[in-house]
Length: 120
Image (cartoon, rainbow, N blue to C red; front, side, top):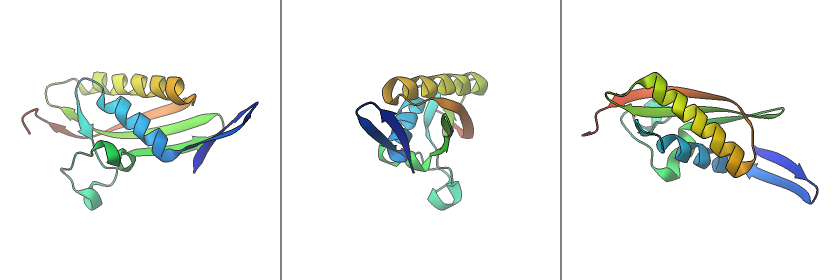
């Protein structure tokens, strides 16, 4: 499924993989985020941190009438305040989707899959 944007010059289709890459990059760019986690940890490995090419496995994008709803699965660093890290991720994801792709994020749900120390 892709997001379709109609312009005066024609249609623009933005694939969910592109949206997942932008969301994953925005999420991992925040202080306190160790990495992206899989939305299905049993299948993909419980302790696996997703690399940039696999961000799609940690992000769920649902199209809505006037935007998208995004679920982001992250692993946070031990010793950080989880609520503040989550708020920061939400704000950065919403900003990047709007500025890079022109897509409105109606909701950004952050699921913290685990806590890791920096040495792990």
